[in-house]
Image (cartoon, rainbow, N blue to C red; front, top):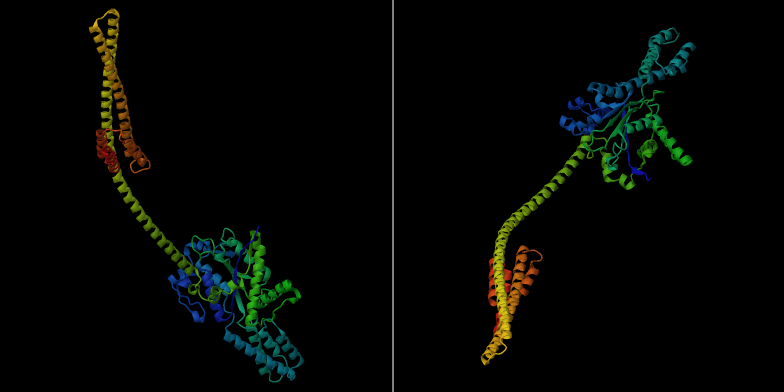
Length: 575
């Protein structure tokens, strides 16, 4: 399975024993421990060029207080919620990290000068052999001591020796011991690192949330890293911030670790030297004899110091990959050079020492960015709603118009349906008349048949007839011919009636179907059927009747078409 690449944010800041270092370190701890009381009391905390008086409103924009329950702290009993600690307990944690001032810079310089001056004079007296042998050995023993010297006991013993200008020598020895005791276990300079803050964060852009890498896992990995590389420099405090994000997000959690600058074994403030040594070990292990190692005196130029910091990042990337990311199929890698040196990255580095409120890339800026995005989305939704509302109004208007048209058509349909019923009744009356005529014709035929039978019988009975009978017979034959002719006429009349009524029936049927389908597909087809049936075979009276029926239905198009065709039929008759 392909590894998922991501970037890390690893940085560190050193806070010295001097006034500036203690002030800046305290400011960072106030923020990290969420010491609201000190912040709200307008605690001054920033460097000289960015001193800022904080207010309640300014504090609230650094994080979302509703997410404070997600912040964690590492304790002897394990990782617990920071909310479990009161403000007073957090204040004590701050003091435990910063610790009381060891020695003011002015006093340190004063005692250093006193010690140096007294040591010089005592050494000069030893060279001039102004002491007895026992006194010289005693002074050398005191000068070589690295522990606290009992000044009263030493003065008493030194006073027992035989020497010239004893009071001057006792005074210098006393000055040396007091200065030595004042500086014992104290750094030679207050510029040494008192403690170091290390920050570990997975940038939001990677999209790796707490469901993939939890805050506790990040804290545990940070702790293992520090213990592995700097075991002699105790972790004074370690916290996880998970409230500098939007409520719906799961990304943005980051770890702050504060480690002592003082070696727990030697008592020396040499964390920076220890880190340079670890970088050298890392480079030698990776590059062998070709490695470019750094001076372990601590004297580095600006570029070398930057390289050391970069290699420390490499060490952290390698450790996190091995112990945290690779088991999760994630690989941390540095950004390409073009991205790492981008203007945005330069701006972030430039603002690293500013208060979060003054940075361009902070929780407040991210919140504003999200608000702006939401406002844009809201405006877009408002525009879409307006468009949908306008479309809805148009549809509703069309529905009203269609409803009115439908009502009118319904009324028209009912009227046409009533007219069709009336036409069907008239057609039924016509069929009744035709049936009556057919019955009359049948009756006449039966009468004629009876006459024929009677005549035939009479002819058989009267075999001998005179001229008058023959004449009658001739007349009878003529009568038969006339009757046959009439019967033929009646049959033709019946056929003609049936033929005449069929087109009329079909035309009325097509007219009814056209009215039902008016305005829809199929209506035109029925119109063609009607026009085709409206031919010269129909009597002029029937054609006028059909045109009148069409007029009553309100079908103007059909009425005009039948009128034109009727005119054409009449014109053809006139020619």
